[in-house]
Image 1 (cartoon, rainbow, N blue to C red):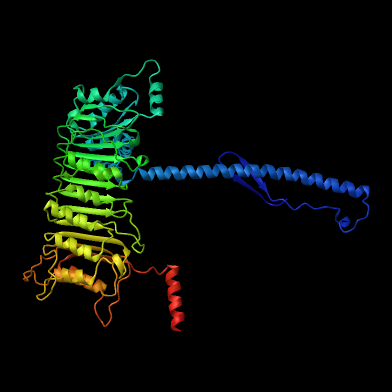
Image 2 (image 1 turned 60 degrees about the horizontal axis):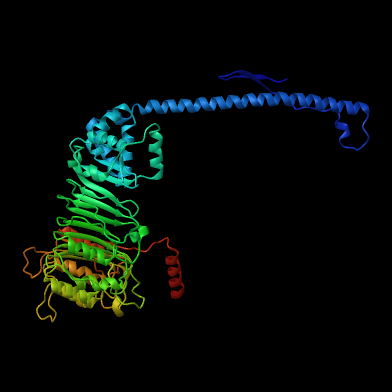
Length: 578
């Protein structure tokens, strides 16, 4: 046979021989169909037997080669893993001081807003190695959040092992205040507790007795308490100590038929957050839990009808700011609400699925003599090209301002369906306005109620010119932000930008009845108009404002070159011109 090669492997030695191609002595009978003689038949059988032996040897060598390749592959992977592990020992993070490493841990955990994510992040960094565990345990801010679970049965209790874990967790937080989350234990969690306590029944503490007793020395450090308010498992807290922020998640609100007292005493409570679960959406007022609201200064409500918002405004006498998301249509029961007078000074409304003049009852029933800041955001509204009435109750809102005898200093209208005449009337009612933001997601048309900015309001926003019939608007304005697809045949984008230029004159000491702008923004939701005749483009004029010192932001929606509609339009224009 030919040459012979030997290959050494980690497991065994084997030989790979270079074998010749098997030959046959019966080649002469392949081209004819004559009967075979006994000699030819024997020769063929002998060739088959010899080739079969060679085939078995090849299969044996092939199996050995596969095992060798597999062993070499595993050795290659192990060597690469070893090199990667050795290189990891040279990582710069090992040279970081403990103070900087602690800041990295805090930044990582702070990315998780929820209690569960924050706690998992803190546990993750503390279980990497002994050094990281030491640094994590010494970083108190990683351990200021903790969840407690109650059984959800009659008497609503917290397991003693939960409390023991909480006390150990609390010791790591040092002197920091606590953010505690109280949740109903799931069936799997209760079963796991029973499995962990096979010989004896676990001891449970009632949240009411725990919060009202002096058995734990860390309760005075509770600053934020997050509760669930369910119809199937309710408990009553006599007091919540020094908690300043209370968060309540309301589930299955439609099952409640009366108001249940949840907290009796809260001497330092300043912030209240009420959130209604998405599965509780209906168009009826919600029975809110009875809470001590006399000292509440800030309140946030998510997904509540108008009735509940007015109810909070009526009961919270010290309320200063209300952030309120309402997502329900008006009902007959809400039209008979008694008038409400409040001392709130900031009102932030987010409106979902309220059509037509459904905000009218709010403006009709509310009186706020100390109000100075309003923000209203329509999360959804009808296309202005549809023939529907506007969802902005302009007359009711102006009547509300007149009745309250206030002049707003900050007004933000986001995605409002308001026409030019209504906007002028609104600005006339707020002469002391300092901050004004107007946003619209639709391009506007010239006819009908859909046009928001027109030549008249733009002219009245310019510095006062003697001889004009219309008086100037908002002379104290210092912050002006406009965003939308403003369009019209009687005005152009340059007319809108001219307002910012006129409000920010070159000479700061220029005599004018208007205050000088400090901040401005102009965002076009479409491509900007082209300036002909060698005039500066809008971007260049906006850049000049920035150079002159105004904090100004100008953006425009440029056409997408990859948009097939743009290509079709350009092709059609080319064919038309040809």
